[in-house]
Length: 292
Image (cartoon, rainbow, N blue to C red; front, side, top):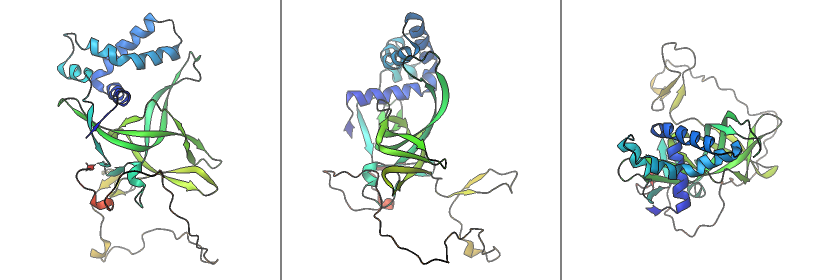
C-alpha cells in the first residue's frame, strides 16, 4: 500500500474521468461552457478545460439529475492505493522498469493509441484530431479504489519522443521525454512492446511490437473461424501425421565464419536502488507484488 501525492492523484483521477463513458456528457458540457465564456485562444481553452474539469465536475455532480455512480466518481479515489511490480492482462505480462532492471526479460515497454487534438502551436486556431501512437515504459503499477464503488489499474509511464529512420523503423531516445503532465494510462488500453538498443548510438532504442503468449495466427485457411486462437502450445510430437517442415526460413549464413561478440544485455532503467529484493524469476513472482 502506498500514499499518492496530490499531483499524481489528480493526474490519475483526471485520466480516469476523461476515459469514462459515464462522464462524456459532462465533459462536453464543461467544454461548451469554457468555449462560450472565454475569449482565449483554442489552445488555452483546451488547457483550461483539462485543468478545471475536476473541480467543476464535483460541483456539477451534486445535482439531482446525476446518477449515484457518477456522483461517486466525482468525489475522487482514495489517496491510499495498491502498488504492484507485475500485472497480467489479455495474455500480456507487464512489469515495472525497476523489476526489469534485475531480470533477463523485458516487460515494461508499452504503446497506446489515442485520438488526440493536435495543436501546431499555442496560436493554432485550427487543431486537428489525429490517431497517434505513444511509446513509453512503466514506472509504477497502481490500483485506485473509489471507496468501494469501483477500482482501476493504471500504469504510470515515461513517454518518449518517437522518430523514424531512413528505413521506416521507429526508435526512441530514453533521455527525450514528453507528456510529463499525463503519465497515467489505463492498463486495459496499452499494448506491449520492447526496445532494442542501437550499438552505434547508446541513447537510441528501436521499437519492436510483441504478441500475447499462446496466440497463434491461423492465416486465411479457415473462413468461418477467428483469425487468432488462444490456447496452450501444441505438442506436434503427439501427431506423427503432421509434417516436420514448419515453413520457417533459415536466415543464418553458412558461407562465412561466425563472429561472436560479447555484449551485455541493455536495460531500460539502470539506476541504483536502496531496496533489498529476494531472488526470483519471471515465473515465481509473489502474490504481494503481482496481480492478474
